[in-house]
Amino acid sequence: MPTIVFASSKGGVGKSTSAVLLATELSATGKTVTIIDADPNKPVSDWAAHGRVPETLKVISNVTEKNIIDLIEVEERKSTYLIIDLEGSASMMVAYAISRADLVILPVQGSQLDAKEAAKGVALVKQQEKAFNKQIPFAILFTRTNAAIRPRTLKDVQSQINEAGFPVFNVEIYERDAFRAIFSFGGTLYTLDPKQVSSIEAGIANARSFASEALDRLIGIYGNTSQNETGLTTQPAEVA
Amino acid sequence: MNTRRSIFEGVPDLTEKARAFNPKEGVAQGGPAAEKVAEVAEAVNFTSREPAMDMAGETKPSSVRRKPRYRKSGRTGQFTCRAKPEVLDELYQFVDDHGLMVGEVFEMAWEALKEKHKKN
Image (cartoon, rainbow over all chains, first blue to last red; front, side):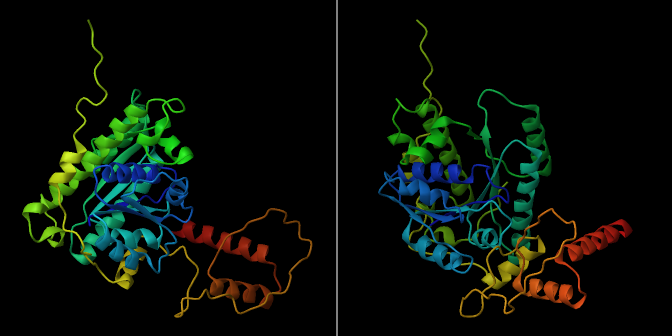
């Protein structure tokens, strides 16, 4: 039942791509995963409509500010992992989703504008932590970066985020044709046709490393709950 | 002979890791009430992007049917935005009461806003 929220008040930063990559990687391990597509543009629902969605993965759409909290609570009971993809806006929907999150992932591209918007997301997380006296683990995820080239603007944004002390994923989601292709052809990285799409294996390695770090973060927060009868209902430990 | 490094070298075994992590299933953790969350969100400028709802969950349309306003004024630029119906009702009431055009009121409001920011 861990709930992982992808949030950013800016569109086009790779929230839906990262959410689908994480969901498909987790479902490939045999665990059940639900994605709540809370973006009115319904990118994840459009992806699912292509078909070839893994059997252990379910996508829920038609989400409103009025029903999102109820949906989260229902789906948390049904699936091992709940992933929420949000619209790129500073909306109330973002706040409701974060209020139920076990981990908030804030995707950021290497631009000043993105970093500024990510800071807004962090401000909301911090505000909720203070108001509700609970820790909401979050981490910045650099997305759409180039595996080979490190532009100066990206380095600058990274150093600003490090200076602010925000936790950052070690793994970045690279700009890859394979990631775009799953939204064009549907299915997962594993069902793409190598004749149509290049570097699928590199995409899989990238997605798997990201999912692995996300799991590490959940394990770091809660420990291995198979040895902890109280499970995730315990107060999360302090995270760096 | 040189061998090419595998692309999966150093990539963790996700299935093994997922098997080791067994979060408790079938439970919802709950959280603060929606009203409280909304209050906190508004403090950091996260606002509702959906139409206002009444208690029955119905969209509340403006109760006023507006008459067409048209006269030549040289204002040719177009500006469109969405606002709360009750704010628009007030705005059009002001326009009618003062015999102005919506564009004129927008320009006046803009000037006033600039003036206010100059003072601050």
